[in-house]
Image 1: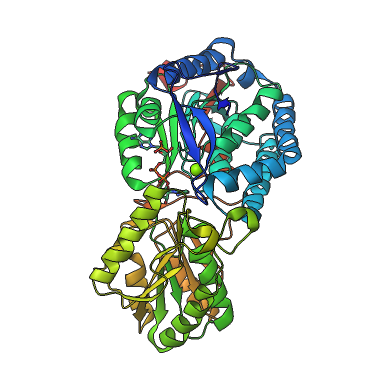
Image 2 (image 1 turned 180 degrees about the vertical axis):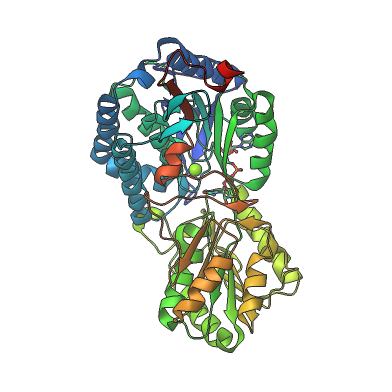
Length: 494
Ligand code: NAP
Ligand code: MG
């Protein structure tokens, strides 16, 4: 089996240590690839290359915007040409159903095209100012931040990379990218594409390896101007601490425990369908998952019965055959999810369906967990407080709108939330009270390249996507022009 290499300063290179890592298909435990296992010495080379590309030659940031935009569009075209390979790779690596992987790849392609256009839009402010120094004109320009370090999780391997790489590269930055060591393979394909479209040497670098070494070094380095991270809240805190040394910019997209509030007047089948998508899409390994269903008491029994019926009917299997749900991403992660399930049972929550590892037929060797619903949960139930990041949903009830809002917001997280009701005014009232960055009314989980994505509270700071997602990778400079040179205004008169 050939080894997938790191990409540093325009070259494909093994780790300096020579170490490699086995990459596992979670559907059957087969080794599907070997990757270079980078260390701090490899990252240092990548950071030096990115720094030289940005501050030395500066070719990429100085390119006229049309040329840069054309190259970004070429990336999207090349991804489209390798669409099937990219989708299959994410399915084999992560486990997700193939149709969902295709969805990720298409979103990623659009993301590059979106920012290729955006960087040509008129942008920045112009101000007429007169502060006593004479008549001045002031305007702003947006400039790239410099060397951007990027660290991503395993749940959307390609898409989480592209949400960062597309805007950062479009803005003219240099990049040092570290994918999750569990799912690095689609990033290798993306970098093969980046290698071929004419981006100057050293501008984009890929270093695979563990978070504790490669990731930590990126976050700590005095030569990295910004670190952008998607992953758990605990590691996000580590990143923020590590970034203090040179006060680098930090972007954090972290975990969630998002409320899905359902009123008794909601369209019943619609609410069931979206609740299913909210918690079981992508095996529940979604940061914005609707993992806490908060439902009006009078509807609860009927709703839970229907949800359980739907959950019990779900097919599990190898993602390549497009089941309803694939395996969890790794053995460690499956064990973590099963532990949470056991804790919930021990705490007295009622397991309505699922709640165990599934090993029937072809699933014998994979990391499959049946879709799981826990009723009778309270604010003290561990899985109501902590992110499970798997196909596990809790049910809690409310009698009044105020009670629903209080339950929804009683969490350290603030990533997402939804409300289901046919009362329009109530929908708007409730959604406005949810302390979260992404909210939905009568749907769950749709996301667009055009709209900003990010969290309140311990779900992080900064925004990805939309115009804000470009601004994350830019500094703003003001340029002031004296229109009456030779006059010193009040200073002269003093
Ligand atoms: P994770 O354990 O926090 O890891 C994320 C990334 O950080 C991986 O690349 C990991 O490397 C690296 N890392 C680990 N320790 C590090 C350290 N000390 N310094 C620097 N980097 C380090 O998260 P995960 O388990 O991959 O993903 C699940 C989490 O991501 C969930 O909490 C989920 O909510 C969150 N998430 C959030 C969003 C969002 O948009 N808000 C989107 C997707 C996922 P290794 O792979 O080598 O461990
Ligand atoms: Mg894997």
